[in-house]
Length: 94
Image 1 (cartoon, rainbow, N blue to C red):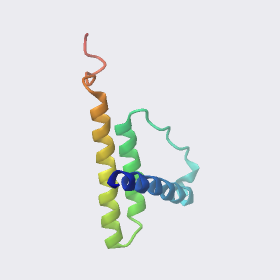
Image 2: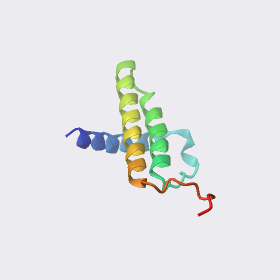
Image 3: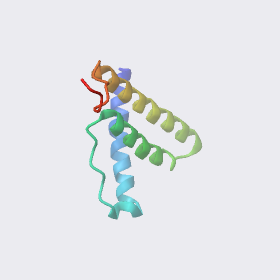
Image 4: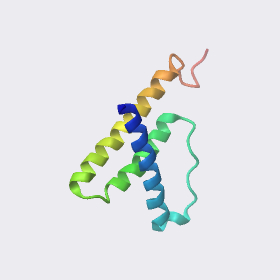
């Protein structure tokens, strides 16, 4: 149930952050391409969520920021777990 609520929060956060982004004055800049690396994408999603959280009242903002950080951490940890032993840099000789 906790995982479902986390994904639900992430979906709501993404929707609300997209609406907030569309309303911002920076909407004229082309959006950045989504990253294929889940950890990089999680960090980008966190930054968007953090900006959306900052528009809320103090109590809601703290809870929102904590939830955004938790979602980022879950995604990064899941990405690390699925990588397995392939964490060698690309320039490392084989």
